[in-house]
Length: 274
Figure 1: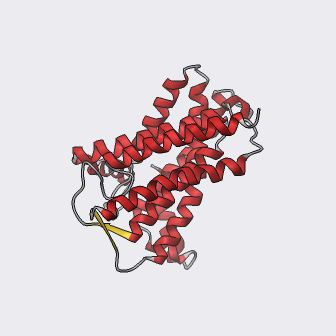
Figure 2: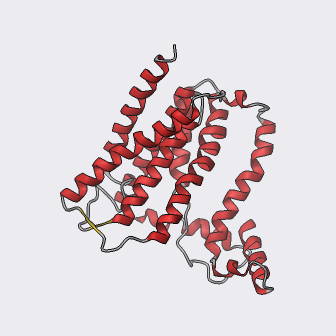
Figure 3: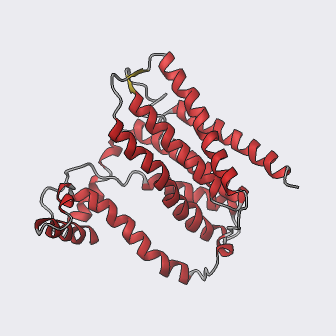
């Protein structure tokens, strides 16, 4: 319902010479932004109803070693991806591109910084924090991981709503599920996203902080995004590997290895503080 209003407002501003750059964005861009705006607007009443007043109510504690956790998370997630990338190129599943898209690299770098803070604050900070209050830790981690994986499929293709009406936002919701026609791709992508969501939730529960999960998340986005700009898939790889390093059985194994490394690091790092 909000998406058409945002789109028409932006088009009106651009037509009058105010923020003219907004004219180049299609409706689906505003649909995705409307989802974020709606989530932010609904957070306050959700927290009020849940009687959340302080971070401690969400099982989040101050972390004096936040920089250490942030850097460790990034390294722990990037290094296994790097070895996976080397393996796929050596097996000729992927090949290096002839050129590197620097403008896209800038956008990807910005996303690897901004997205982890937004998604971790929402999914592992608020949603998981509220679910943990039920006292069922593993059920809470399972639920937030399912939600995290499912939300990533709510992305409509570009230019699906050329004529915008009051119902275009609802049409975009329908278009968002067009990509699930391929059962193999759906299963591979969902499984990997679910495991990644579980690892991020586990890191947050182990440290009672978001910094380790933010580092892990940033490393995955940066590593996968950079590899996609450096190399292209030469041969169909499903179910072993998809169009990026976050889809397929091999990426699923890499994620599991990252989980083991993360667990080992948190065990010995926390033990050194005692």
